[in-house]
Image 1 (cartoon, one colour):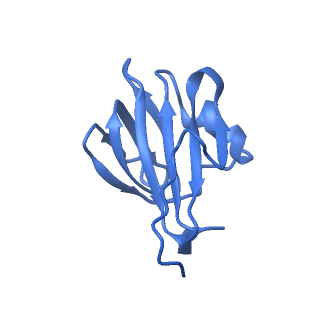
Image 2 (cartoon, helix red, strand yellow):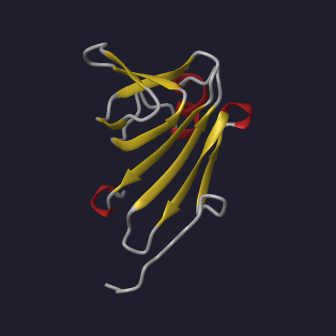
Length: 121
């Protein structure tokens, strides 16, 4: 394991999930295997319409998310309980797998998501 500090920028991601006019997710993989994601979802974005097809149409989002909301309001629903939670600016959150979601209102949602090395597939 290197002792050096590694810095990366979302302007130069390793991968990008492009959701056209509805936004996208820039993905950075660090040397340790940790992943950082910068997600931008425009008003009108829904997981069902904009992200599900890019993931191969699973029933719900299969990934856990840990992150921080910079702007906008994202409503996330757990499919098993039908419980919905609003994620708003300033919220640090943890979402288990098995959810979908949508942007509420007219503001763009901006999130930073973190994934430790042990969660990589």
